[in-house]
Amino acid sequence: MQSVFDQINENNHEQVVFCNDPQTGLKAIIAIHNTVLGPAAGGTRMWMYNSEAEALKDVLRLSRGMTYKNAVAGLNIGGGKAVIIGDARKHKSEALFRAFGRFVDSLGGKYITAEDVGIGTQDIEQVAMETKYVSGMPKSLGGSGDPSPVTAYGVYVGMKAAAKKVYGSDSLAGKKVAVQGVGHVGQYLVERLMKENAQVIISDIYEDRIQALTKQFPSLQVVDKDNIYDADMDIYAPCALGATVNDDTLNRLKCKIIAGAANNQLQDENRHGDMCGEKGILYAPDFLINSGGIINVYCEISMPTYNADRAYEQTERIYQYTLDIIETAEREKINTHQAAVQLANKRIEAMAKLNSNSKNRYGF
Image (cartoon, rainbow, N blue to C red; front, side):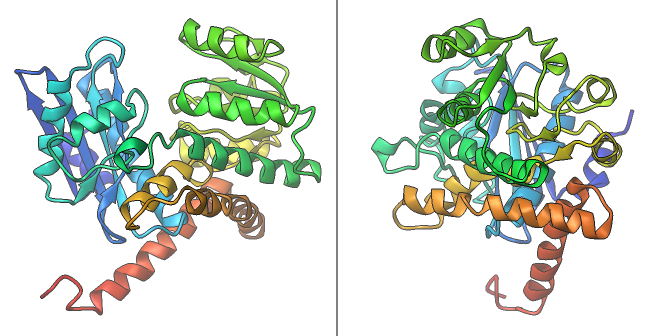
């Protein structure tokens, strides 16, 4: 197994903070990948990892993904992420989130946190009792609220752009879309797909989520979480955890498009990105089309007053960005993930040069 520092150095992470508070039971990791474009921003995830090593691996991949996501979206923020090890349905407490808030505050603004898997606006409100470096605050407190609807909108327009390339029309009416995971983002994506008369298939590890959505939309088709990859579908929309596009699933998926909200969908970014193309599947890069949430967060932290119209307007640009990335991939004969990473790195490198020529940028 690689050492901790080898893992940190592998993708040039700037800083990793291990947070431990025995009184509250807090065990968390904050990973700051890159701050060339600005302070690192990215949500906090709460998940019951099998091991601390698994949690570290996840937060390192997620934080790197945030760097790419923020760069491609044209935002002036860097990439960071945090994970709290614990069951979001059992282990939450005000004390735990306030303890986490103190660790965030200790970084002095180098990292700005928000919601992610397992975290809601009430949790963020408790984190904010100890630090001002938060976003996604409840609307009643002047914040942008839950970013999930905006994330779902970005996935939706990215999916439509992919459909335009594959089918010649961006209409999703009649298309069979399998949504894996109907949590915060997944449920909003399902709502948009149903309004467009798509045929939607869903799966989730939590039965109560399934019941809530099927009550709202009785025509939904429900499949077991382990059988979602075998469903008769046109589009696969992974909206849970990452690495669901792998050797096994690519041999089972019958879709023409992969477009979802989950982070790090490709288990091996280069190999499985290539395999998608070889199998005739158009992969819409996850960090490109799921950037609506961080765009929403950015509209909160970069403006005197949050403006929802501005957030949706900027998120709508994902449609054209997706078409541009597909075109670049075809022209340069690389997979779409590589094309999106290439675009992100170009912007980061350009800004790094600009910063190095601006000696007074940080006051010295």
